[in-house]
Length: 286
Image (cartoon, rainbow, N blue to C red; front, side, top):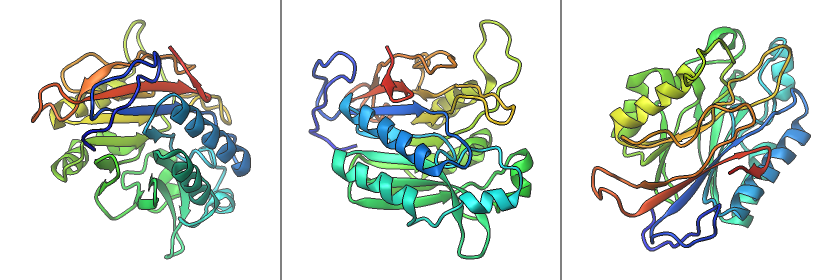
């Protein structure tokens, strides 16, 4: 990621090492079908993250629409082109605040299909769109699977990879992003809640930690919260790094903390650093 950049610690305000980048993953609770309000909340979260010192902001899967669609007709009413209102509004705030944003949205494809997509937006506009390949459960009845490998693109911060939720569970998919040179892999997610033994991390979070370790790169997953049509969510947003303990614990309200991370440990072994912050509902939590 860009050398010579000096950032401030998103929580304490203390200066960090040159070349540092602050990453924020934002847990939100989108309301199904209320796109304008959902995008307003997403923009508020990006703005709060930028105010806290973030340079890269990751938002949840389908953040503009919600997840539990009744059928394809409802999905179709919420789907939009990649140059539609959601991506355009997020691109405007990314340019205004000088940040890179990764956000999930339901994409209307040129082929007539609907895709569970994630936009990678740089300070100068849309850089790429990734269409989720590994569809989970009822998604197969609604969405068309993507046909391309994970997006890995050069940004103003460095090489950023993008996958979506269930893609994380396929080691070969994460490996493709790492081999393409991703310095950090961003994953908008919607992890449905389920039983978890007391004191244990959700298995979804463990998989993220394993992916970061075996692929020698950082992984930032932005989960969602709230209850939607009877479905609860893990609330497991996390940023994982190589070899060290996770950045945050499980928390329905997204409580977490930030750590300073070595960037490119396979080359630099400790410097420069990456700051990580976890935000929830537009608030930086400590």
